[in-house]
Image 1 (cartoon, rainbow, N blue to C red):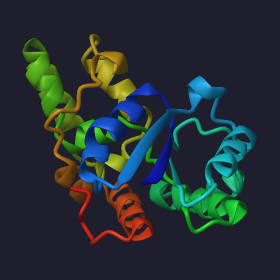
Image 2: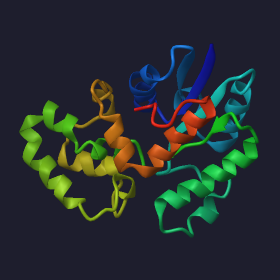
Image 3: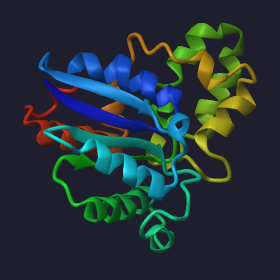
Length: 213
């Protein structure tokens, strides 16, 4: 059985990988989410050691880390700041990590800007369902970010999570780790960088295109 290790920003990403991605992979592929912060943090030297230690055999290793507040010790981090487009900033760092690791079985991915972009990709439907008394505040929040090109571009003055908590004080990542019914196809359509990551993962695993939907 082939293993796919996902080094995650935290428990929320690990839950997403386990509940949303794992069931969509072939039965002969075992996806193993790993809470990277729980293992000692996401600084690049630590991440690199973990990646290299997991690449044995035929295992595939990928990441699910936030571009927002990414430690400055990541390769080409400073150079990436010259790009206005956040997707390009993420690509610059991802390519640098990929070159540094030097394995075709490693697929780097930085969330732009952070996990909550995926909640915006589904129109905050889960929050509206679970917190109906906040429906008006959530609609106002959605209207306030209409000028962003995609959910992955939300970070002007405030990142996605800060915007959600300002409108919905009850929001805590730990309370929203049930991803049953999450519209992955919709997220792939609206979040191009997220979609590119899954497409690369499909290619690395030898799967047909758009099989992880």
